[in-house]
Length: 277
Ligand code: 6PG
Image (cartoon, rainbow, N blue to C red; front, side, top):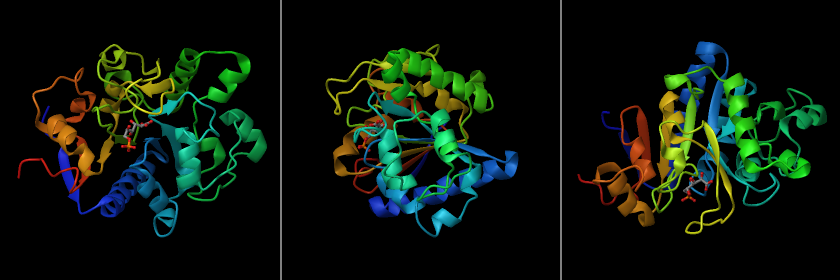
């Protein structure tokens, strides 16, 4: 298994700066290698500082963003213009687009046309792969339908990596106070080695927001080239200590599956305060 790389930044702003470097390096390497790059974004509050940094100079100008495709590691089962939506968060902070309608990606293709740049990082709307929640709500499909559709899109669009899973070039992951990653909470069926690539998750009662979720299975992260776990704040210090050194199982603490080589944990000093040395 090996051990992960652990980077300790002074504070959240420094963490965002270092993470921006890693994200741009990872995407640039993929573009150099295969002419495109696929990144899975995280929800939550921690990555916001990173997204805002990427959305402006110099980072906005560091990549041919039209060759980048954005995906999501998980999503809340709400319309993409709902304030709790991870897509909404990305629009507001990374894409700078405040009026992305609740269209699916296909409908957006007609609305804006492929290649239409958006404010923020100039990723064409057609490259932004939101979960088809709006479509499901409009047509009466359930969350499982959305999950299956997303998994099919990933299989169509990404190369196959370890275990035949879709291979992201970069994956951003946050960790909740209960040690969840993505929307994979302790005891989740998503933790199974034979879990589907993407699955619907009932609304968590212990973690806000209490919406049903969609999540990639953590197993998919094994196929990724760059996995960055971004954790900030003293409130996470204990769970970080346990995730990186505790005698825990993934069922107890899902983030512990990322205690392995090939993964980079990017912490601020407050979150790293209880780590040895
Ligand atoms: C989500 C995220 C979730 C998040 C953690 C940490 O949809 O909420 O994917 O996994 O990363 O809950 O959230 P914070 O960064 O807000 O602490």
